[in-house]
Length: 173
Ligand code: HEC
Ligand code: HEC
Ligand code: HEC
Ligand code: HEC
Ligand code: HEC
Image (cartoon, rainbow, N blue to C red; front, side):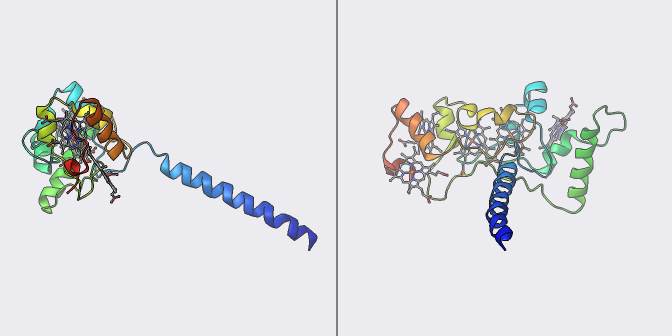
């Protein structure tokens, strides 16, 4: 009986420590799972494809847009001689999607709340760089972790620095 009494708190501590470790491991993941592990570095830095090629509304609209399978299929056609097996893997995925008439369901990383007023076009015409809000996302080799770069605090900091309005109603409807 004495022994069980002594073991109980020890077991409790072990369980708590394990739970914390498992939680940390699950949230420390460096990237989020996407249907295709896209590589911005290869397409933007090495092949010099412009951001607007894939995020086509970014210069003229509130939203930027994410690319559909047809854009990938323009280049990713099965090529038995291609030295990168992942090139063909993408070709097979987009072909299968076309046959079943499905889109690629990208997981949105940057998404603000419904009551926040935000426009890409407005910021880009004021020469704010993509990276100021998106960090290295546009040049990263693997998809980024869930970012914290579009918090209210980060919007406010830049607006204060650049003397843009920080009135609640500037950003909230
Ligand atoms: C303008 C042509 C072009 C377009 C458009 C394009 N790709 Fe690629 N992609 C390539 C080429 C070429 C490679 C092989 C590059 C290499 O291995 O150096 C590649 C490689 C890849 C790879 C492998 C990356 C790696 O780390 O090895 C993935 C994944 C990929 N593309 C996904 C996509 C997706 C998804 C789309 C559509 C959103 C897309 N690509 C659109 C040309 C393109
Ligand atoms: C060849 C196509 C292509 C080009 C060029 C490209 N992107 Fe992307 N981008 C994608 C795809 C596909 C995704 C969705 C998958 C992912 O997040 O990895 C994405 C996702 C993103 C996201 C995350 C959006 C969200 O909420 O999930 C940002 C931010 C982004 N790109 C910024 C950029 C910037 C900045 C550039 C230029 C420096 C750029 N991209 C160039 C294809 C492209
Ligand atoms: C001033 C900050 C800021 C700048 C600069 C910026 N973005 Fe964004 N971006 C955001 C915010 C905030 C969201 C979330 C918007 C939403 O939920 O409606 C977002 C969302 C996105 C998305 C997700 C998909 C979508 O349709 O909105 C993509 C892709 C993206 N941005 C690409 C870019 C590219 C490419 C550039 C540069 C040409 C850029 N962004 C510049 C703040 C910024
Ligand atoms: C890196 C700097 C920077 C960041 C970060 C930033 N902004 Fe801005 N924002 C600006 C600049 C500069 C302008 C002024 C544009 C102009 O003069 O038209 C602006 C203008 C605006 C406007 C229009 C203001 C008006 O007076 O009509 C809104 C709305 C806005 N931003 C919302 C946001 C939101 C929401 C976020 C965060 C998700 C954000 N901004 C993050 C720099 C930034
Ligand atoms: C420069 C833009 C900007 C300004 C100015 C601003 N906010 Fe925000 N606010 C945001 C953004 C962006 C978010 C969403 C953050 C996120 O997605 O986590 C937000 C979130 C919030 C939330 C959380 C809502 C929720 O559902 O969780 C509250 C409350 C809020 N803001 C109140 C205010 C008040 C009050 C003011 C004036 C003192 C203000 N905001 C000024 C950009 C702004």
